[in-house]
Length: 161
Ligand code: RB5
Image 1: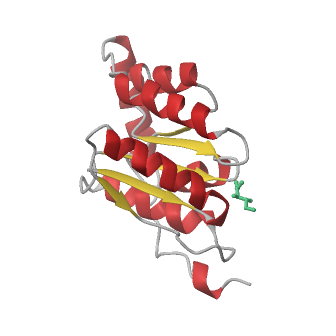
Image 2: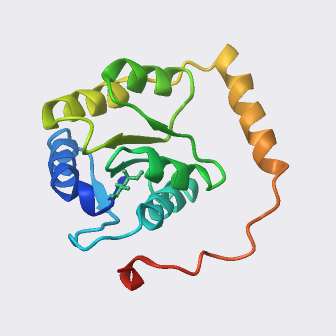
């Protein structure tokens, strides 16, 4: 099961990517948003990230206008390595070298066909381990040195104007 999430700027592309994943035989859990109302990308990045970090979903895809905001949000969750990729080469390497568990891109940056190519490059790549594993281990050590967040953020999407 793969998690997918997006803000209001990426509903159309999210639905296309969701269909694309399903056409490859991948089950998808959609964390929204499915409303065109302006919302906070961070809420959806967090939902996808928590689903991946908990093991509920294997990996995830996050889409906002640029892919930047939603990736920053996802990377706040321990265990997440979310990478913004606007072309297939980075997407492939983000899996092979960085073991990226969330792929992000921008609906205002990439077109539909390029987005599918980015997704395919990422899905088809495998983490190479070896010398890259100790770098991932170091990232985990950085996380361990952080204080746990006290509570969830107060502002939620529906309250926004
Ligand atoms: C929303 O207007 C936009 O800021 C958001 O989709 C994203 O690009 C943020 O990084």
